[in-house]
Image 1 (cartoon, rainbow, N blue to C red):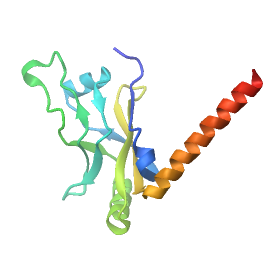
Image 2 (cartoon, helix red, strand yellow):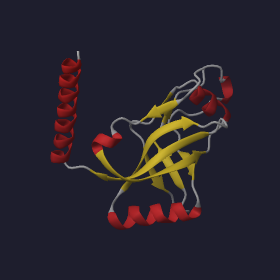
Image 3 (tube, helix red, strand yellow):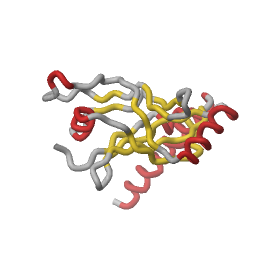
Length: 153
């Protein structure tokens, strides 16, 4: 079993501009948390959505079936409830409905007490030219680091 579980959504910061971040708990069943502790999860295609009651759910998050689960195993792509304060939920719901922003998972981790937590971000979609700018900045930083390394040696 791995010691530190930290599953990241690498596409999130490339496709979206993150406006605000929150840490939310996740409601998980027995085989889900066991599979998560083995590192068998993916949040790359997932997003968050409110239901009719004002509760926040993460949709399309993949937690692979637990290999020793047997009959009591879970569904890999079930909707999972996120736990936030009521004040935070109301603020997020207002931002999503009025300004057209979206909520995306940034990373999934297990804290010191052994509880599964997820960092979520209130995000605004980037345009194509913003993505090109991000790629150009990344390449220039990489070239600058390469020049500094060769200069120091």
